[in-house]
Image 1 (cartoon, chains in turn red, green):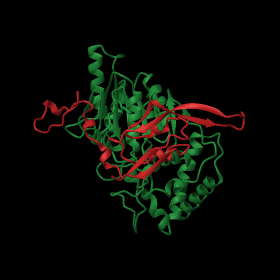
Image 2 (cartoon, rainbow over the protein chains, first blue to last red; image 1 turned 120 degrees about the vertical axis):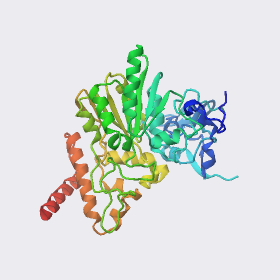
Image 3 (cartoon, rainbow over the protein chains, first blue to last red; image 1 turned 30 degrees about the vertical axis):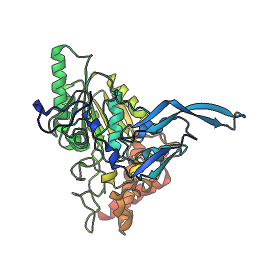
Image 4 (cartoon, rainbow over the protein chains, first blue to last red; image 1 turned 180 degrees about the vertical axis):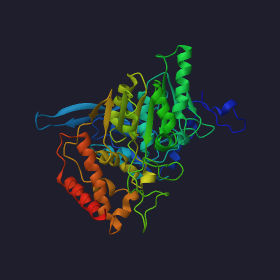
Length: 113
Length: 319
């Protein structure tokens, strides 16, 4: 059931519908948008955790291959890691995910129409 | 790609500022509280931005009444649950900002702690009344510039030190007191789970960066919160049944207080005025006292010892 926004009639005790704020798309505030490059991502989930809106999600359908070679264990290691992406409806463009990403796999670019 | 918010306690669409450390802390703490929880909320940022009528971000039972009585309502809910025989099945979590906890709501919180009511109180400490436009509160740090403690020719901002709220709560003899930080977001869930496993009054204080009031870069929210701990101006520790357990000290040693103060607009005047340097030394001495108190096994760095010596000298001359 999608919550309806109505100011015509006050409910008893001014009770609002749980989770009704989903109708308010704070994404309209954004002046910078994150770009998830899906190249060096190691799947640490930092972007999912630091997002104040919690609007970064893992996309289990789409994956990218991460090739890593460590000094201790020679030879290339290939790992499949799920892509992450943000919900444009709610992202306010604060840039915390890009700042916190340990491998700098997120860029902030100006939002243009 | 589909975005599914069904399992969220706090659903997006709330109108917090961008880069809000409180929204981040709330999202993680409330999610860690688990199912069958009744929340009460004091007036403040957290209440205003989640309940913009006719919408509500809360996907759980939530009560808001006044600024001061978040803990009192939680007590009432607790006794109602007790009467209905629902204790153990439903838990109560009270939340509030630093003003609603340390200034206005202190008597309700103290009363609830003294009665031994079983609930968790979470204080989002963003160090001023940010919702109404940055007025100083009891938890505003020393020398911070706010609209009611403005820095200028005759003042360096807030002239009082931060109230030691966790120690006040610990003095009630409650079984759990914890301090978390939005900068250490991976640890918040653990703090909440440890608290929720204990019966009795529990207090958790979460350091929440406010880019609006602190005049810091929204993207650097996490860095600011981490620096607060790394300079030891915001010590993170837990007191479980009277035993204090500090978070492990930073690997690279404590950092000078300037690193935390410099990126924040609310401390900008300290770096502009000529006498500001002596005030920074005083802040450094506060950090040194924290280091010695909670991490006695870690050596206090030389810059902190120097600051302490200088403060002792300054106070001697003026006395």
